[in-house]
Length: 294
Image (cartoon, rainbow, N blue to C red):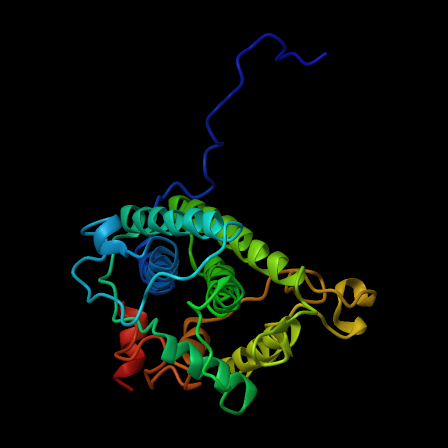
């Protein structure tokens, strides 16, 4: 029997190996993540509630301009509560980052149907007719959710080796856990419908995810760090399965991307120095703005 029997449990984490909460060099990489957190928060909030950060959490955006084109989506009873929950979680993420490392103003974010249509057109290599509208129905909205949140996972996996403060590591681990959970829910919901044709295009859900993942790989310029809902058997878990509910490498570990790779994808230009796409005026923070001066 344990010698601790009868004693109250210890509720405090063990002392950190490096007793510094936040190192100065932790700040910029973690603040960079706010660009994606703002994006997700605004997309989910508007899609579920028809309102954004300025209404739900006034002052959280630190005076940054409101998003372009975001609006309430036509979500069914199964999808709506999921998006509502995830939307409010993103508010908490922004607050936690600001509390730990300080904040940056929300950049101008283009969440218009036209911008998502450009993403899908670029993914397929031709113009979809009619243009893809993420707000039209639940399936379209879930496919649009496939576009951005996964990049947050890549970013946090890439950020973790760059930081050392115990509070910063605690923050990034907590953010990564929930972002990965959100992405898993999106992928699972889409996986259930992978063989369905997305109306009116006669293109399956699985092909949409394949095309979006291939686009992100092209724009990221650093090999395969992205996979759709199905893969060739040799690329599946242990080279033994074609299903791909979770995107992961040969050891089933999450892929990492650098800020430059993420910006190339988010700008839809493949170049961290050329804004566009979701951030027509560029992302904010020292890291993102440093590329714009080159």
